[in-house]
Every structure is written in structure tokens, then in C-alpha cells.
Image (tube, rainbow over all chains, first blue to last red; front, side, top):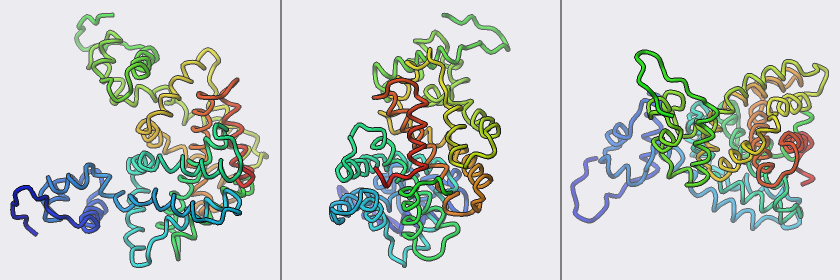
Length: 196
Length: 196
């Protein structure tokens, strides 16, 4: 677990393992009290190495979401072009959010931490900011809505936040696949909350 | 504009004026480049006085939203108890968001700044976190939805973000009252985005 000093060659680091070690610490001691030094010590890396891969504490929690934007874009491009806009968005979003079953427990713990710490959600909103635009564009393209319309301005954020909060709900209460909760929330957004 | 030193008595500060001075600086030079020192200098206060009222840069932008949570709670309590849940939420939200016409231009500029800076939106999400729960509770109480249901977990965030993004849309494109855009966005959330 120690790092011999090597000139000019950055130390390799197992991103998934370090973020898991950090998650354990955050859940046990509280997100606010754990420092990057604690994470470095517990993972057996130098502070510098950890900072090189995780510039902020919240990036230790959000690292696993890094491929999401690209995955969503790919799935949106692949969805049946005949599907109504919101169905296409829902299908692509659920596919892009898919987590292999062996990672469900880890995902639950991560989502509970985010759900309990508004500062982490806030950081996620900043990280996922580009997703709004991708969804808005899909709705504009598929439904013929004007790109500067009110609907285009609000639909992306609504999808992202509904899907995120559905995932947190799954982590706290849900059985089965996380994708089912996201699917149900986006169906509701599509059909409207009036019947709530 | 200078502050004579007075022992034991905090210097009075015009919250609205200082946040307006800050907004001017942010819009002219960019939110990231302006410092609290710049704001202190331009408003004629000491750095310490400004920090006492505005602990962060983003609080200079969000200060005007401080009364929103209480206003929303009051308006929700006052709305016709016979109204369907989402109509009640919409009416209360539009009333709580009302801005007197003489402040529309200032509000537009503030919302444009927030719209252009995801970090400011992220901070708003953290500040407005309690609003989610207030809306969820209104929907639970009025529509008889279970408090731990998926709908209760997602509806609050969807309302807040739709309303916020509608307000930003109004600041960029809209004519007339900001409340009209918020009203239209929440009607859409209520009726569903499927028809988008």
C-alpha cells in the first residue's frame, strides 16, 4: 500500500477502489468531516496522487457518473427514430443509467450519501448541466418544438432531476432494478403530475 | 461611502444596494473574476462588513430569494383546499415568485447571470433544497399520495427546477410578467411533457 517514489512517472491508482474507500469513510464519519488526507491515508496513496485523480471531495463520489453524458448521447442516437420524443428520452436515459447487478449495493450507498448531502446534489447539478441541453435537443429534434421555447428550456432539467431523485428513492426504498424507478418517474413526467 | 470605525456597533449595510452593485460587477467582468474585495470596494464598505452579511459570493446573487421559502409556505396554506394538488402548488408558487414590476429589469439581469453560471444554479439547488419537501408534503396532503412514494420523492424537485428554468427563460426571451412563464411551465409539468 505504500508508494515508492518514481521520477517522472505518475503513480497508478485504482479509481474505483479509491472512490469506494472514500465512500466508506463518508458514510461512517459524515461527508463534511472526512478530509482528502483521510482518504489518501485510508487508500494507501499520497495526498498528491489522490488529488491528481480527484480534484475535489465530491469528485470521489461522482466519479462513477463520468461516462454518463456520452452514454446518454449514444443511446439517444440509437433509439428508434419513430418513438415519441419523451419515450425516446426515457428509453435512452434508463439504458444510460443501467448499473450491473454486482454494483447495486455500492450504488445504493453512493446515492444515499448524495441524498443526505444537498452539497453533493448541488455539485451533481453542475456536473450534469450538459445533460439538460442534450435532452432539450432530442425533444426539439423529435417533437419539432422550437429550440428557444419554454418547453425546451424546462424539459431537460425536469428529466435529470426526476431521474436522479428516482434513483435516490430506489436507494432508500426500492426493490429490484434502479432502472425501474427511473423508468416510472420519467413515465410520470411524460404523463403529468396532475393525477398525483 | 466611507465607514467611520465605531466600537461594538456593526455598520449598517443596504443589502439590496450591495447585491445590486455586485450584480453589475459580475455582469460586466464575469462572475468568476470578481472578488469579494472588488464588491467591498465598489460598494464603499469594508470587506469585513460585506462578509458579515454575505458569507459567500453566491449569496450576493441569491440574497433576494431569502424570503421565498416562507412565502411559499404561507401561500400554500392560503390556497383553496378544494383545488387539486398540482393546481394548488402552481398557484402558490406563482404567487410566492411574484416580483413588483419596478424590479423586473433587475430580476432579469440576476436570472441571466444564474442561467449563464452553472455554479450559481448549483448553489441555488442547495439553498432551495427545503422547497422540495414543502411541495412534496403539499402533494402528499392534498392528493393522498404516500409520503414515501416515488411520486412524492420526485415531484418537488421537478416543480422547483421547472419554475426556475422558466424564470431564466423569461429573463432571456420572455415578454410580460415572469409569473406567466412559471405558470405555463408548471401547467406543462402538471399535464405532462408527452405532447412536447
